[in-house]
Amino acid sequence: MKIPTPVITLIVGLALAVSLLVSSMSAVSGEKTARAQASATAAANTVTVPASTGPSAGAAASAATASPSPSASGSGFVIPPHANYVGEVQGNLGSVAIVVHDTFAVAYFCNGKTQEAWFRGTPHNGNLSMTGKANSSLTANYALGHARGTVTVDGIAHVFSIIAVHKPSGLFQSIAVVRGATVKAGWIVLPDGTTEVGSIEPDSSLAVPPAQTAPKLDLSTLTAQDGGTTLTATPIDGETGSGF
Amino acid sequence: MATQWEPPAPTRMDPVQPSSSARLLVVPVLVGCLVALTLGIYGRLHSPTGVAVDVIGFSNGGTVKSVLASGAVVFAVVQVFTSLVMYGKIRWAGAPSWIGGLHRWSGRIAFILTVPVVVHCVYALGFQTFSVRVLVHSIAGCLFFGVFTVKMLALTRRGTPGWVLPLVGGLAFALLVLIWFTSAFWFFTTFGWSR
Image (cartoon, rainbow over all chains, first blue to last red; front, side, top):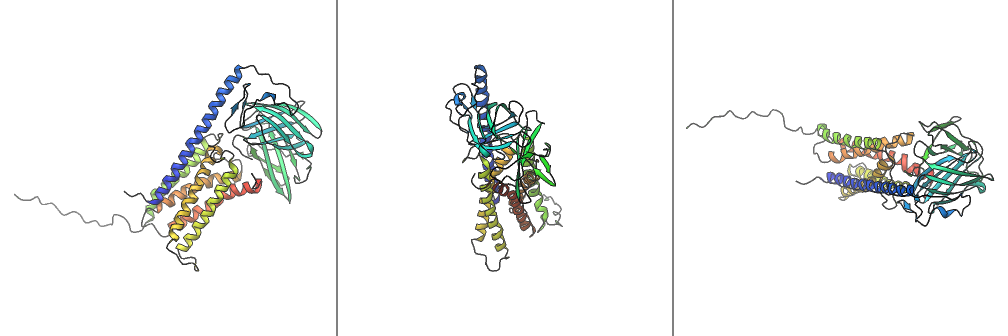
């Protein structure tokens, strides 16, 4: 029986989809197995992380090359390729979020008022050295479940030690053009899943854009009201690659 | 020995199959609905935290998917244009003998280009509702593959009414463009080309 060519088209598409799906599933389960094994061995080791406040604090992660599968370093740390870290900085002077997705990392610091900065950088073996507007900087070491480092904004250095989070906690961003100006807002939803802090740059095209308190983010709809405009927040999520 | 006399077979009053009927579409439409529902329900129920397979740098997906989707739209435009020529709607272009082949092959290429994109989208991102853009994209995405299935299966049946192929083909194109606007277009305008 001759199969009609349109049916062949459907069958070819379906076969391609199934093979991609199956390899995706095995890639994900391979990653999960590697993480489970690595965290089991890491828990068995006693690990001491030196209190690191400078960019040279790469001692925590030894030479494991960053690759799409998580790498286990010699001291038992697993460096995940995709992760979201969120938490408050020491002294409760603000919150910081770090999102890692393969070769890109985005971070955000804000105190919910005028002090905030976006950072971009490239992760190297669990180390991050990122820069932002007006000489702000963020350096951190991260591994599975935990990140620590220092973020310097407006001349003040804040030390932080934060944990990995999943939805609904994380970093959210909204970029919108309102009356000709590019308005950029960032929200950090803390690990409790409900507390959110955010700042907004009313004109992010400036070299040093000033900031103010962001309108409250509605976590069920991921929108916020800025005057008459509804801002829609997109999650910046290292695990799905959203926002990158 | 008398042969057994049997009454003659009754004459069929109605033809077995009507000469042209939309009823031929029932099975294709049902299959299409099944495809659309499967995509949507799977996308919604399965927790989309995984990354997809790292094919051609796929796990860093936004740019690759947007480029593939844009390629699919380009071939879909060729689809629409060739179908207009085949139906005689373009006066300055006669219908050369290869126009049908171009139509079919541009369609096949467009469809195959969408397959890796939809696998990554549904598997790694799921059916999302957190903004209007992603809701429209999720719904249009499910509907597109259902409609495309209907079009393919309708082509296997002779005797469907003349309006079926243009309607289903046009609907597929409209859905694909809607999908592209709510994803690749948004991606390129938000993040630019250089990622």
